[in-house]
Image (cartoon, rainbow, N blue to C red; front, top):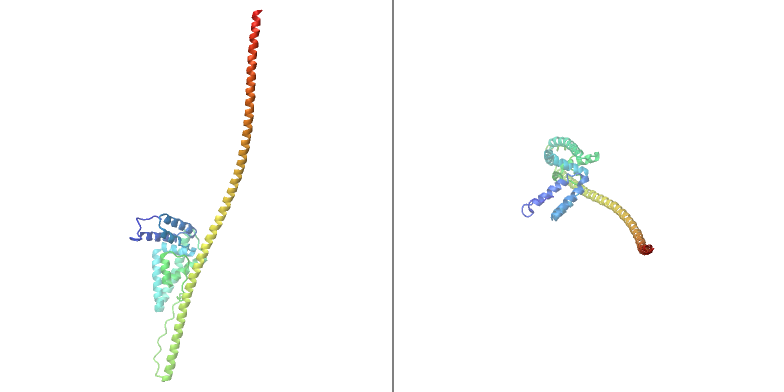
Length: 325
């Protein structure tokens, strides 16, 4: 990751923008290449002296296959993404106002669009080299339904950095329109005071029961969201553990290979030492033979010279004898 100009953390925030761009890239990177790419980007930031940037990049967690496909969809189909987010706003508004006609129409749109967008996500993933299983495609659909039901989920998906699939809240309508509120009953005839008091008490009790049910429903939805977040954290931790175990296995394999290489090198070194000692011994013996031969040659040369001198001497005497005759 290159730095652009100076630091804009103090005067404009350019480094922060650069980190955001890197994170955007990572979360559309294939899950199988995510970790290697993340470490490469973090190392580049550390080398450039941007420790905080490197920390943020290294903290990114590899998305599941379904979450990655949902991220691809949000990035590759911006116009469909915008319209889908607008549909979610309209659905939530209709749900709050309990508009049966609006809910019915929008819910029909929801089913069609969720199915269409999940197919697009599967197509994008396939084009990127990863075929989505039926389970993964159902997770994409779950994420899209959550986006329609929950504004926080909508914001998370719009950023395109999901790590795990999202789950829609149970309180949101599954697709059927809410029952229209009943029309107001005609005003009752005046009744005795005691009966009116009993009616008021029953109405208050119903209201209190409805309020308790509403609170329990909210608590249940909140507990389900917390459970879902805990489950996502657990899956993330397990994914990290699996990566660590895989790295450990790879390191063990590499260490075993290196140890074998070292053992073979040590064996070759021992053999080389033995060869050197043998060659040095042969050389010493050759030197000894050379010295012996040199001594023998020197003795032979002396004897040859002595013999030559003797021959010359005797030959001179023989010549003098011949001349005297």
